[in-house]
View 1: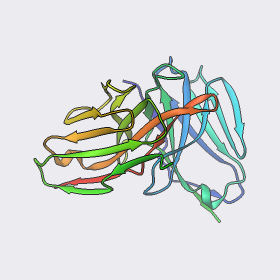
View 2: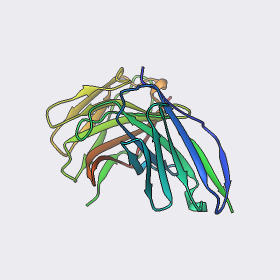
View 3: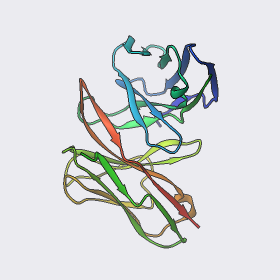
Length: 114
Length: 114
């Protein structure tokens, strides 16, 4: 059973601060990892993906991957009220680049406090 | 370019009734997916289709059937609906984005079985 664990929250962060979201996974062979954002009543949208150990930055977002410890995290700098959403961690247990099968975590609900 | 479309948006069924959820994409993607999302359970893969003419079971296929009618369309059928199938159903298709493949989600179908 491939499992992806996230703290369900809610996680409350003041506007302008750094929000830190964490995710652990059980399948040591997983190769690629995704963060989706889902606003209430809407569908998920991809915001970050990462394959290699270390950090990957895209604007205010940084994904961090540690395969030895089997965790992946998402940092949101300068948090804005529009970042308030549920963040879903997804782990690919299929092959990369064409045959991905994702297992999703239950999501962390993030609230940015003005 | 409408992306991924789903019909209907809302549906109420009585136990034992059947229905088909429709999904279409206009992005010329090969792979398509059906997920269900329940509170506290995250997104779970029901069925997927890696290409036209092929379908495979995901994590929770029992009680469902699928048809990949052509490259654009992937339908999900409930032959005899049960209250346990009350959920939000998302269709997704997968295409290339930068150095990865991204799953694009439709707006969802909210199904209630009474």
